[in-house]
Image (cartoon, rainbow, N blue to C red; front, side):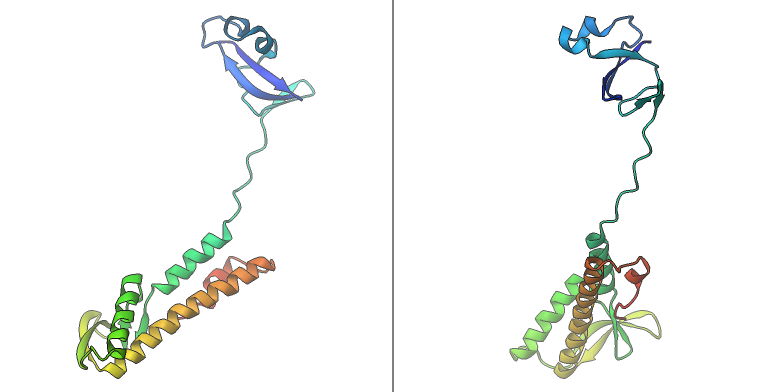
Length: 180
């Protein structure tokens, strides 16, 4: 099998093989393009350089840069939906739960909710899901606590983005300072 490369400034920019058919670039390409190809060793690939008569593979590509804003946002989301502890019960703060809390808070504010209805919680002592009776006042406390948690998560994201902007962010800081 014969290998040919189109070389620009000492770099193989395009490599072509005859596939073992014994053909040459002039058999395949228009004359102007065919004239740009030269025989090269079979291992040469596009991107290799001819240095002092030796073909050299390019250095490995650098590790991709961390997409810090996406990493920070993902970490914020993880903290945001991790839940809170309220009066000894685990309270979900995933997006659906946040919406339900907002709806329940509005129902209290609009006078539509009668007190004493249950709120789905995790009993931290037993690890079981329970419906805890809640008054309207407790719903306002619960939803305020969840709101503060979510808001604090976004505040922490903002702090990390500021650290990114001023060059002081570290991988360790991604796991520090989140609300519990």
